[in-house]
Image (cartoon, rainbow, N blue to C red; front, side):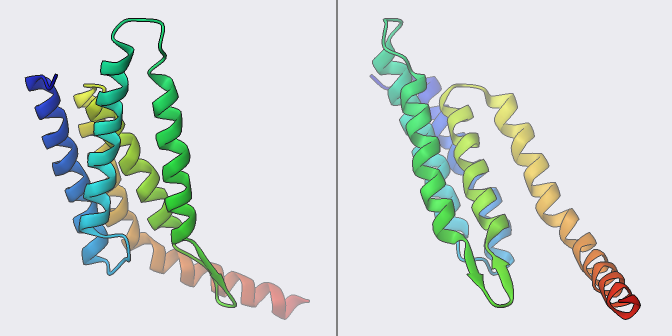
Length: 150
């Protein structure tokens, strides 16, 4: 049976997944709006199903949660690409993993946790991007100086 709180859970998961996905989309990443929205929504639905199936009995709702984490790990691994220039897609993979946890929090009715985690994620994705360029320049300059000393 679908409860009104379950509707709130899936609507919130959809909105939060879309919020993080929008940032990824605007950053030109492959896992953007639709992907993050669907991962968050799916994780919420699996969590709701798990909770309902357990129904206070001996069944453990953590089993489905563990399955969600494992499955999302495979999705994230598919987003990581290694080439001669280095490794790409780590932030996208981490975002996929985080969005699934936010969906699980929504499905588990941990709304405050989901909202706070989403706010921190968006702040980190937007705010820390501004720090990456100066940090990258610093690291390259330091490496070049160290190579000159060798």
